[in-house]
Length: 212
Image: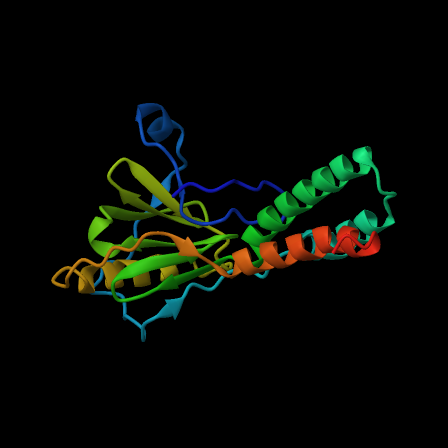
């Protein structure tokens, strides 16, 4: 369940990124905070969306700019062998930007009765509550331990980390006697945006030179 980390001022890291556990990591980890016990936490109506900070302006800008800039640039290029290479290069770079920025803009975390679901740039990932061994708070993030994997949920709105962790703990406790429902990662709405970008980027060049 690993995903690419984004480090920037005011940025958020896409959720459920695995951190390998070990003695070195444990020694370097910041002091953790206890999570409210399930008995003390009221389980809200499910599914419940974890309150997240809004996507920063730079993420929206990076997400939108390739849809305009790359098709415009591709349609401007003169047709030639080098231009075909340039079109491919610009298209690949733009697709990477859309994917990374989409991981911030489209980031959503949802608590259901059976699992924790996190939507990143291209995938919707799910972690069944029965697979969660421990839930703890590290700085302003919630870390769910599953075997040797640590799935980090960050970008949580200020002051909502403890409450979000408590809801996760309550949902996990409520699912103890329920059937395990695991699901594989599935494509998210980000796939539609990437495909739309590719159509615009490549289509602009083909239409400009009447190749389509």
